[in-house]
Amino acid sequence: MSSDVSANPSDANLADQGEARLGWIRDRMRLLAGVRAEFDARKPFAGLTIGVALHTEPKTAVLLETLVVGGARVVGTGNHGSTQDDIVAALARKGISLFGHRDETVDEHYANLGKTIDTRPNILLDNGADLAAIAADRGVANSIMGGTEETTSGGFRLREDYADRIPFPVIVINDSPLKAIAENRHAVGQSAVESFMRITNLQVPGRRFVVAGYGWCGRGVAQYLRALGGRVAVVEIDEIKGFEAAFDGYRVASLEELAPWADVIITATGRPDVVTESVFDSLQDGVVLGNIGHFPWEIDVPALKKRATSVTPVASAIEQITMPSGRSVILLADGRMFNLAGDHPKGNSIESMDLGFTLQALSLERVATAPGTLVAGPQRIPDDIERHIARKTLELLRSSL
Image 1 (cartoon, rainbow, N blue to C red):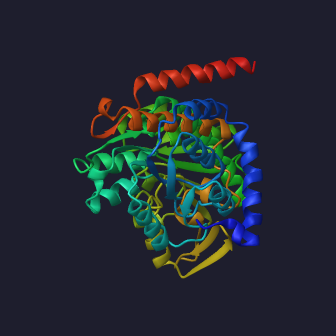
Image 2: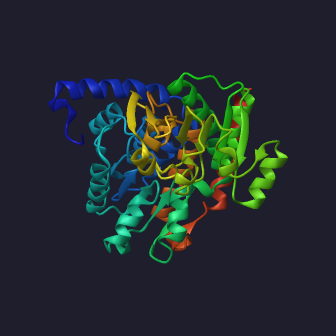
Image 3: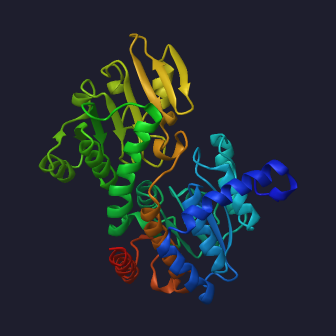
């Protein structure tokens, strides 16, 4: 859907719909509004192409518009299952070419990632390290001057699977304490709980939840479930984080111990193979499985469905999987991020993404204008950028009192 939307009336209508949604979001992203004005004056990306792989929804669109105002040519694709077609159509009107659509297959998604690298971007705006990995695997990484990575999962991938294979600097946005607090803990926590209720229409009070992973996202999910009356337990293999969860008042145990107790299991680790065949037989009848990690690998969905006697779609984001024992498992969004890939996704709050995408924008500017101040490989956001945004955020909060 990167062609001229005006050529097709239905696409034009879709673009109108997307632009109407964008107006509401854009007016409420005040940090990015300030950056956009600065970029308009400075044009830090003049002559540069930024290749993007990022959930394509209205808040993302405001970031991409900001980069274009700064002189960038932007090309790219969304993440699998979370692309919003009206936003792609609205961006196409502005000359921002994004490959892909809401219902694309996994193979189509990876083909679109390849198309993005084929445009030979100078800078990457990555999510899950997909673009960096393809660039490294194809031997074209030396043509890239640098980039950013949004997620925990992508940071793990860069540091472990692609260590010493990325010759350019990558600023890992998820390493930021600002993002950890505002977006991961509070925004993901809220959106995950809200999405669970909206998709399933089930209540939280009194229900038994297991949160797998007590990083910043897991902390937030546990916090907001408990605030609404959920009974919450935590699975965490890191002893220090498990210690923290216990002192925060949660029951902490292994997944094998907690699986028979759970009404709902939510994975938030950024790692593969969290809910696997080892616990399938101990899950209670009607247990709900959902994932909010970036990749759909935390729940072993292929193994779960292979063992099933039937898989019945209940809604676009709910499947009932019947096991040989006769018990059923309810799977949300096919194991993808259910707060972004579920029905009518909203994702994280406008304010949290305003902060997170301001971190992105200024980090990308540092890559474009001062790459010599950065080292090759994954690294934290420069401290001066973090402190500048913290001050700006506090000023905005004070002005609203």
